[in-house]
Image 1 (cartoon, rainbow, N blue to C red):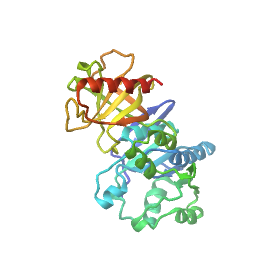
Image 2 (cartoon, helix red, strand yellow):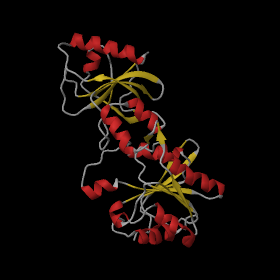
Image 3 (cartoon, rainbow, N blue to C red):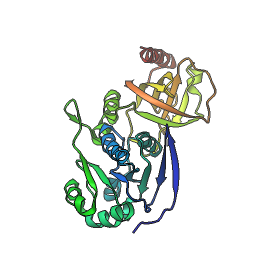
Image 4 (tube, rainbow, N blue to C red):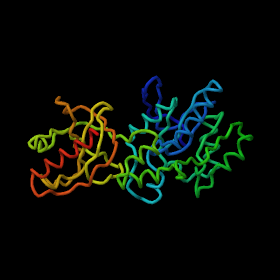
Length: 313
């Protein structure tokens, strides 16, 4: 049974300081939100905010309980393919006003029954005043824990259960599954609509082969994060650090290099500062075109000029 703290850190976001633990500890009388929350999309926000709001109304603290890896990766032995980096997910959760984030090891919990998880983990460690989940939240071995189970036990354990019903946009269910499909298809505008914000990737600017500079289009190169779902290779309309317009190519540069490992290359407009080694954030606005191999560098240059025009429209 997990009852001690191995490590915690603080995450400062706007005016909120969120403490992050990677094992459970005794932290009683708080409002809990349960889920993996990949993407922290509009539906996830409703779940988390319900716990934050309940905590504020009852003069207590709120906590999100989630896992380091998606349970599907453990059950089916598949490589993770997430919407957000861990650091970005933490930032988005902190932005919602959460006081504590528990990112625990799912392997240590997967064999517990629903009753064992509720009693020996949630009740024993947190004595929760409320528990919030989505309509399709399952837990415990063989998925024996569900919203009905939590609702049936709320009087026994003296907590308020809050179930968030399905959330829709344009008659389409808001879900991580749908957002992943949109990312795979390069439908960035749909991704942003269902996330409720602009899809973003951050990373350190690294040295490349300086081929863009030789073509007259200096780029800031960022390695594509591991375990993130892969978008289509091609040109994208983006902003950098929520400030500068840019055209970005994601791919293997078949015309000039044909590299093995795909990379993000952002040509930042009206910008000429050395930012190697700095961490930048890239906000994706739209997909412009697929990556292709051009017949010459001159043809590639002309295409880049057309891409830049689309980024300034």
